[in-house]
Length: 298
Image 1 (spheres, rainbow, N blue to C red):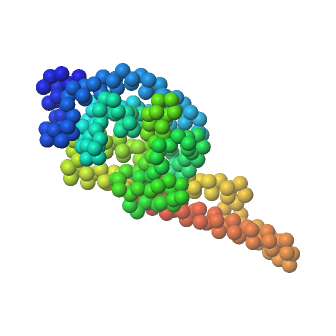
Image 2 (image 1 turned 120 degrees about the vertical axis):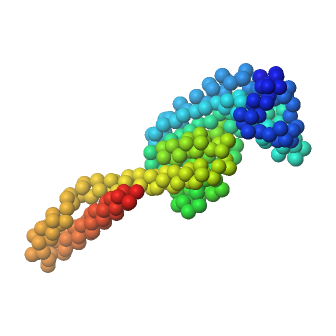
Image 3 (image 1 turned 60 degrees about the horizontal axis):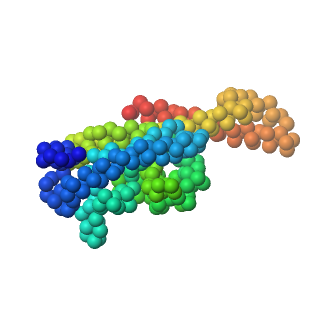
């Protein structure tokens, strides 16, 4: 795979790895080629493993869609080159005989949600099925200023990344390899894909690209909040309709009819209930007006 000097030079250029960085990794091209060939020979096995996990996860009703990937061999080699210096400082090294112990994202699963609050049910499902197989404590990447209440008490919260996603690392009992599971909304996924395509790993220092991606990130976060708001609004609206509160006029006429019997304790109770329902309906209408104003200003 890296037989010629031109192939080696092109690989480093493509992944933006300097000659100095490569020398720091203390890896030979022969060793990297052995790792690459070993991984290619086992890739079909990795694909079958991750597909089995996807089939099981899709049984959760709150999963909107679920995708998977098996790491490309070139990306594996790139990661090993970048990670090896860290292990060298610890007196270790990534080699063909042990690379599966150091790389934990050979296989990846992406679970997508419609609404952010659906994560709670998916988290419960994953913990029920795989809590005994977790290689590390699950954690949520959030942005500073985001609402933490959804995750507090359930997973560790990390604010150091610019994107939003909940991560689980499941170690497969049969192969001993790890499957990286990420859970995020459709809006978070859209921003992440664009960010990855435009910035990683070639334009990390481009300030203009970073600024535009930051705006898109905020827009994705707002879209998620709006989706959550609409979801809650419609649930409350349907609940109000089920309780026969069509509008405030209906409440008003009901009160006029019942007020004649105000000495009747049961009638008073009914009137009070109607007033409370009217207040809740008014809150829903006001919320709708607020949403319309937000949409006009976007």
